[in-house]
Length: 508
Image 1: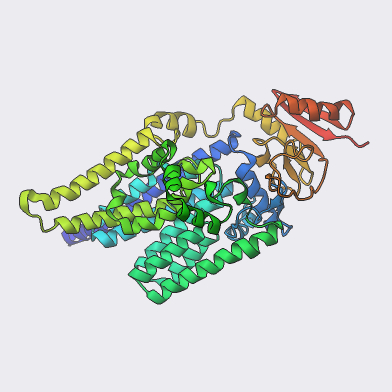
Image 2: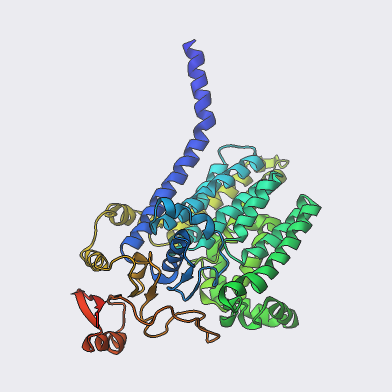
């Protein structure tokens, strides 16, 4: 009886062990990346652009106010179409704190490891090997950069795409469409990924569904650019003004026409040193093994191509949030690529190649992941700096440096329900109010509205109740704005310590 009981315990443990390991990995990622991102905020390393924008926007939505974000000079949906924030808003009724955005972002990216594991388990008919794919996903440098590069609602598209593809491959079309739609409303550019997933669905699953997705994507594209965005900013898609499509045009149609007309220029634009480094940083941490499944990897090709040709410099680096539609398919193509390699080598009995080749694949994968962590990863998450992670980030998470204490003391002097102009590192700690500007706004226009000379919306107020700045403000701005305010007795200094100054508007 005791032996039978012991066998049952061992059997049960073996059954749940992979899920316990997976849960531990996800929890570890969740805790470490939360500590790092919240620590960055607490130590004034996150700026007005972008977490300040989204925090004020969500706060305004949660208080049923008009969501005109004075940090940005646009409605919260006038810059990018990110209706996913409507689903975030109710959480502010429970916990009204900017840190929730960082926690949500980390949770979303971490939970993506679950469908990666489940799909790998189905494809490989194994419960242990899939843990390697989930581990490498959680160790992927581009994921860490995305997680730690401030807060962006578009980051939530990563788990949405991962879940949608998982349900598609399992022919569970209702949850597939649900998660695909949620991905769509994370950012307008996901519509291209949705269109390509429609093509994939047409050829691999259901022709009628595939056509429907493609048609809906085109309708959604039209609505976003011609109806929804113009409704919120009176202009339309504002990002064509600085080269969203590179040198090829100001609209998708114009860009496509010019690319077809001049393919040599396309090649020249793509084959730059920066782009080559970008591709290496994307694929080297996975040993370039995603190319064993080109059909799945094809789904990421629109996002990769746009990043390569765009005139926006940050899109050419994995250190920013322009990898959201790429990361999911790099790992899905890895799973399918490994499955293909195993099937092709199963019949090669000579020299045990049927066992050796898959092992080589996995060794290359793991070695590349570790190398990527050493050489490409974010400083705070790199294996190279693991001692510093535990000593300075985790070990000193609850400690405040003297400069930070001074900043918090200065911030505490500013009451709620007052208007503020704050320098960009101080601003995220003051965004739960109707009117807050990134200094020198509203006194001098800077990074406000469209910023590109097309049009500027009216400023809700030309003065603020308080001004708070630190040493990130230039001497010329202090001399041209702050000093005259003090000299003319328009503002009085109520705090001035270690380059942090708080001014309060006088009553006269």
